[in-house]
Image 1 (cartoon, rainbow, N blue to C red):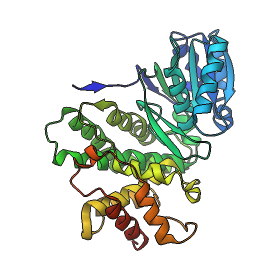
Image 2 (cartoon, helix red, strand yellow; image 1 turned 135 degrees about the horizontal axis):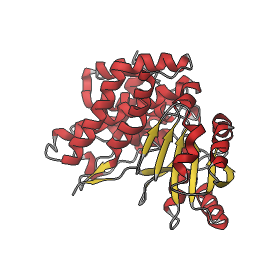
Image 3 (cartoon, rainbow, N blue to C red; image 1 turned 90 degrees about the horizontal axis):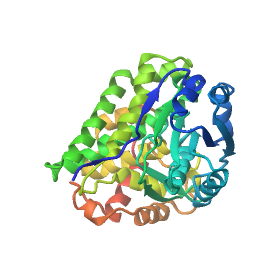
Image 4 (cartoon, helix red, strand yellow; image 1 turned 60 degrees about the vertical axis):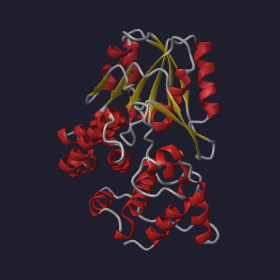
Amino acid sequence: MLAIKSPQAYLQQAGIRARAGEHIRPIATHLRILSSPRAWQAVNPELTQSLESQGIRWQLELLHGECTDEAISQLQANTAQQGAEAILAVGGGRVLDCAKAAGDGLDKVAVINFATLAATCAAWSPVAIVYNAQGAHLRSQPLRNMPALVLVDSEIIARSDVRYLKAGIVDALAKWYEFRPYQRHNPDSLALDLKVMAAQRAVDAYRQWGDEAVEANRQRQVTFALERIIDANIVLAGLANSMRDTLPTPGYAHAIHNRLTGLPELHHWLHGEKVGYSLLVQSFMEQGNGGPDPALVALLRRFDAPLKLPTLAGDRAAALHRLAAEVRFPAASAARLPFEVSPAALEQALIATDHFS
């Protein structure tokens, strides 16, 4: 059975923050807003003026840390106490995931995502990623209900640090490199074929417009190329995650990423940067003694993904051994991949990245 879970509507437009109220009012006129201090400053005063011009009432809650179970519970309680009809999430992945998870646990409360970064596909993705207070991954929580609307203001993206856009490109690249290997042993899965098709469109976009979009972001300019890459990072990557059937196809590089979030030495790495390094590790595992895929390496270098772990606490060999042993991946999914998935193979790949240049 094929299932597709996606937001009900998506709109990316330069300056949409000043007209957001027009699109939100048909959904709700009483909002609980979740944002971060930086994101809230980036969209205002235009967003609040737009809401007020449409007669939309709202109360603001700021997320200062991770998307944790405690933050989700607090947002749920505050939304219910307020009697809000919808949660408007304004920010990056942590804010969007927290709002998605909170809204999913409330009856008759819609979720509206206003993404201020294109660093992940969190605005679209059918899961919420939950961390502990220290930023270590706890789980990927599937959603029963998807956002009613996703808004993206390309002017806000253009003004953000270009590092976020590049990290989002690398995170989306992972969908192609993670899903495509499953096709070798599973050639008849419609959902898998559709996932790979969406991921391929994103890769094509990065090859065609990636450099131009990065330069536009550096110049703080909205261009056709930047808008295409924003859509690739959020929509195409999100679509690749949205299609499912009875065949579980979790991304192996993301499984490595999940364990990397527990390393204090990597807390300054963005999500996409951890995923990029994990893609290199996966490629070493796929290629065996042949070295990583040159096309992948070229893309990782092009968008400045880290290719080596920093100095780790204690004995490095022991740290890599422990890291490999603690990566969790479903055995049924590993059996469907065309390369060995084991702690020993992973440890050898981690070591190989230390000697890669």
